[in-house]
Each structure stands twice: as structure tokens, then as C-alpha cells.
Length: 102
Image 1 (tube, rainbow, N blue to C red):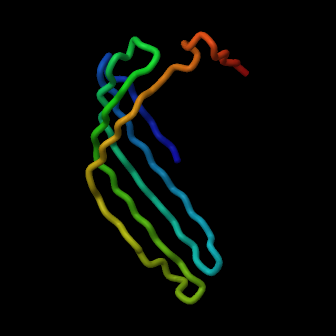
Image 2 (image 1 turned 90 degrees about the vertical axis):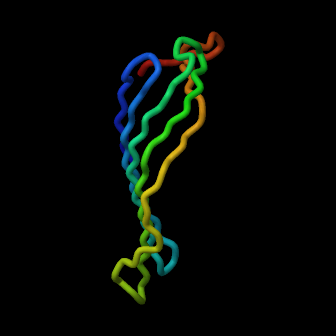
């Protein structure tokens, strides 16, 4: 996966990311692709822990390939809304955690 983000101002971030993953399970190969665009409202950015709420759009596609059917067949694909809730922390600002630069 790869993602790019930008701090727009003290309260807002913007992100775009792409995820690709594939797995083999016996005679089946599965793949997962997703792209999302998110606007994130960050609260209390000046504190050690920053709660956030993000909203955006997501497009996801799953596919399956089997030995019996070499052509990929979509299992599920769709576009929808995305909601993220969480918190970001700067570990180097917490007194008991030492961060090493290599």
C-alpha cells in the first residue's frame, strides 16, 4: 500500500491512499484493491494525543482466480462512503518513550 497526505492547516488533513494485496489459498488466488480519498478533522493537534474524524470516498474491488477458471471473476466491487475515527500520537513527545534515529 502507498499513501500520501498533507496537513492543510491546524485543523484539517487530506489523504489519498492505494492498497493492493493478493493471496494464494490452495487452488485459489484472491486479490484486493482499494483507493480512498479522505478529509480528516484533527482535534487538539498541539497535545500529545490528537483525536480525529475522517470522511471520504472509497472504491474497493475483490477478485478470485481458481485453477479451474483462470479468468479473474469479481467477487465484489463497489464505491462508498468512508468514516474513520481514532487518535494520532507523537511517541517522541511522551517522556518515558525514547525514539532512536537510525
